[in-house]
Length: 344
Image 1: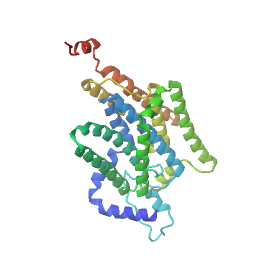
Image 2 (image 1 turned 120 degrees about the horizontal axis):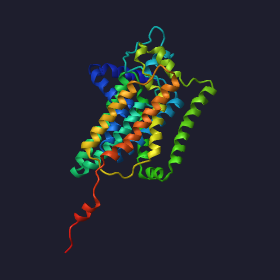
Image 3 (image 1 turned 90 degrees about the horizontal axis):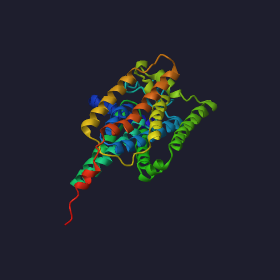
Image 4 (image 1 turned 30 degrees about the vertical axis):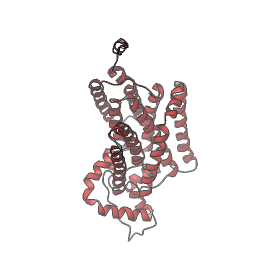
């Protein structure tokens, strides 16, 4: 950890002039922001791609949450205050801002793991479309992909959110999870399942997370230890966002996963009329942002989490069912028959 901290100190010195740009990068690739912007926009372009992207992101974030609880690794901004590597005389003062104080464990990086999944799916689609223009386009896209991950890693280390190895592990696990969840055989396997069975798998995932949570309590480990560390060592408690805690993430993910389990993977979908699907999607995104902004925060934890669960379930279901139902391009089969060339 000490070597990683020294590396981070050099990084801080080298990139201090680019702080505003790095802040923009880390905000743009915040998993919560991506979940509220990128995925819905994809839903307005293609229901099929939306289904693949949603499944990959949900399972990747679940896996990230599970690993964070199991590995229980420090973030730099509180490790530097807790470690015995320093004494009272030489303990450095770590630079903080509103992007630093995240209340979840540090390993693996959720930003990198989730962003790797988003970008992998999107760049895969772009590569398929770019093949017709030659290998140079594909190479350029892959360079952009790896450069994006590098910039996200630098931004996360610069603001004291992660160590280098936490970023690397996040990228590697993100790629592995995406390749698994994007495989056609995996999607077909889920499609063949009954709705009840898919919902049963959702329950199983939640049970595993609950077992890890209460198992830690049983062995005398506080599952919320990272939240306490963040409150203890964050310079300004107002920097802390409750929506970045692991429990909140689980509630958000479960609402969307239940909606996905009800509808099921979309292996084939009719093309969307973008003149209708994009405006509809933007309207739904706006309504969702407003609904989240008015989340009842002062009526108890149960109301807070139940409302969050319901919002994500409802809108995910609408993106998968309402958008294609209202904006799919319907082709009259009679027109198709009449358009076939006559054989003399």
